[in-house]
Amino acid sequence: MRSTVVSWAGVGCGLLTVALTALVVVRWVPLAGVDDGLARDLHAYAVAHPGVTHGMRVLSDWAWDPWTMRALAAVACLWLWRRGDRVRALAVGAATLVASGVQQGVKAAVGRERPQWPDPVASADYAAYPSGHAMTATVVCGLLLWLLPARGSRGAAGAAWAVAAVSVLGVGFTRVYLGVHWFSDVLAGWLLGVALVASTVFGCACLGRSPASPQTDDSAR
Image (cartoon, rainbow, N blue to C red; front, side, top):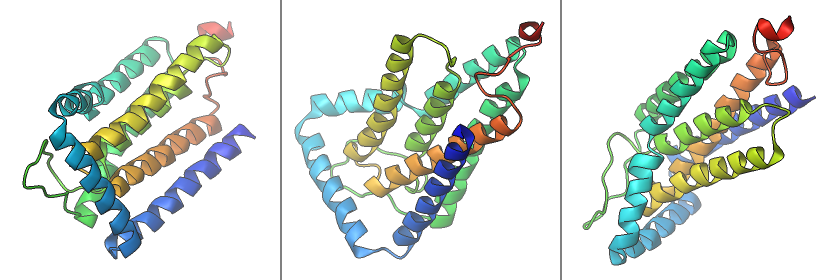
């Protein structure tokens, strides 16, 4: 039942991404208006509040940077591998690499320009759509939540979910706040991230490698 829900969540997010991408490509006026309005309002605040903006840059460029997230994924892979859970170790590593490839491929295909400002507070490389920060954070945080033991402490699980939610939503906000992304770039990153996590979880469930299943040969003895 759970694997079915996960698979449908992935399909739904994938379809929403296709629809959103089409609207971005055709430059749908209502969407462009929302993107432009949010970007202008947040940029004006960022310029007027340099202290807050510095904090946002620290969060975006260090705490929630894609390379920070990939490092967390690498640690998780090594931990799983040492425990003998080779399938999930490879799944986490592969999903993280696929996320990087997909975001760069879509960026190249869509070729959307980033917001341009006469007084920028930050800069970024490559095309805007989708947000690599948002997608990478969603994939890594989603996979780390998936690795939580099914019978673990509720308090610890709640704290992990809270940290993951703040990280995923927070990094998306910082990218728009810093004026290097449109909101729809971030939304696409979130949707693609959820779709990839759902695909990974569903694939491992089909192989019988869920968190509730035995993880090592020793556990089955």
